[in-house]
Image 1 (cartoon, each protein chain N blue to C red):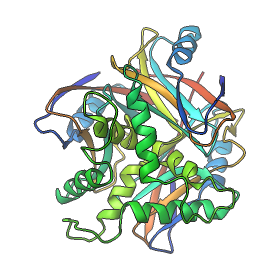
Image 2: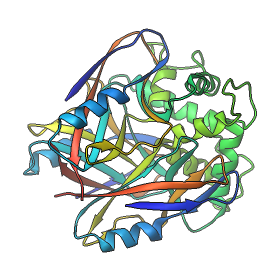
Image 3: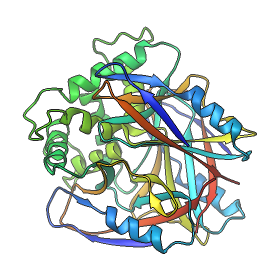
Length: 131
Length: 131
Length: 131
């Protein structure tokens, strides 16, 4: 299953948790793991707090301090910072579900992490059965 | 399956490899992947050296250098550093097993990573069959 | 299934995408997730750009700026930087496939990340069925 995401800023985190809930509901599997994969090299995915939006802002601004947007990079496209952040956060997350209910903690949301937008992006969702 | 973990310090890594071994033993599956998921946004999980405890100390202290505990953070709870470290290490690890034996390398241990303790924490373990 | 990798430098990223393609072809499963696990604590694995080799060079050199090779580390072997980088990039990646074709994006390659070579390394590949 594919989720299409249009990002609006150079760097932003978009909460896709609701879309994952829906795909688990539509599946015939009661218990398992949902695997969410980003098909890009300048975007990542992470799980973090969904209550105070300042958490996501702090993650983005601190990553910019640690991995500067401009630096002595060799890559000709000038977006090496986005590639590095993508590798640090990772290209997939996987979350257990049971009785078709995703087992996220109270404050956990699933965020698509744009580091070189705005762009049209694709995320692939797979459902795996577990015991 | 749920593992309950009580952490004792603000920041510490706890080796949970033994508990994962036990859960694989109790399962009916001979070959597959064990998936270990942290239900929190100020804690993470990682696999690293289990022989010299200085490795884990170096990871914690270097993360504190790169992502300072106090900084210009916006999040009102004052624990943004812990949220950022959680995203950098990730909320899950998954490890293959075969003949009910986990396929960790000689020096690999599975560590629950507390960044904002002490707290009571929960980890969800799922067993998936593979070919 | 095990992939043996001989690295040639202290730090380098090796593209193992072709080997993963082959193992999916040989499997009897049409649709699922391929899980790739590094059995070491001074090496990692990541997915990033396969077109311009400068991207991988920028990742390696920027990680060296953020996590210096020499620092005030306690671990007696002197390779703490490699352990820290291994935890930041992670010990596994997992990628969906469908009709035996891996669902990587156009520019995505799977890289074994050596941080303390040259060494002989082992990677374990598991194939999981999905719906």
